[in-house]
Image (cartoon, rainbow, N blue to C red; front, side, top):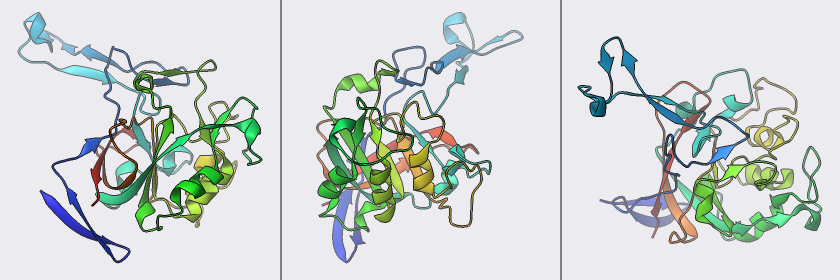
Length: 271
C-alpha cells in the first residue's frame, strides 16, 4: 500500500509494504545487548499447580513469564518519566502514529578533539557526537522533516546487536551542545544506536535527557516548560543496506503505563 503526504509544502510518497525495522531482535536467554550491568532478559515456563506452560513438557500450550529491564535489555523507547516523579506513559508521548524523520550516519569523535561541553566533565577517552557534526549533516533538512532523527554511528558493526556495554566497552553519547541543538531544531523523537544519550557513568545527572525534555538540572519534577510529547529511543540497529536520508517512521510500542518499553521503530523510504 502506498501513501502520499506533504511535508513543508513538498509532496512525498511511501510504500507501507516496504517497512524496515531498526529494532534489535531480542533473544531471551540468548545473546543480547546489555547496559549498565543489568540482569539479562530471561524467559521462564509458567508453572501453576498441575499446569505446565510448555508443550515440550506435555503442557497443553506454551505460556512463558518474561523478565525484562527495557532500559538495559535492547531497543527501547522512554518518556520524560525516566527522570521525573510524574508518570507520562510512553504511548501518551507519541502523538502521531507516523512522523517524518531523517537518518544520518556519524563517526563518533574523541572528546579530546572538541571544545564542546558536557556536564559532568568529559573524559579525554570518551567518544562523542557533537553539535558541529549534527549541523553539517542536517543543514539541508527543514525542521518539519526533523520530527524524528535516527543516528547511526560508524563503523556500523553487527556486534552492536549483542554488545555488553561496560567500562571496557564504553558507548558514545551526545555533548550537551549537540542536545541543545536538537531541541532548537524541534526534534520530537530521537533514536540512537547506543544505549544512552548520556554518558554511562555521569553521577546520575542525565543532563542530555533533561535538556531534551526541558527538566531543570537536579530536579525530579516536571515544570510548566517541560515538553512531554517527546521520546528517546536507544539501542537501535540500522542495517547498512538502509541509506541515509528521508523516511516516514512508525514507532511501535505496547500500551503499558510505564516510563520505558521495548519498541520497534519501522522506517519507510520517502520518495
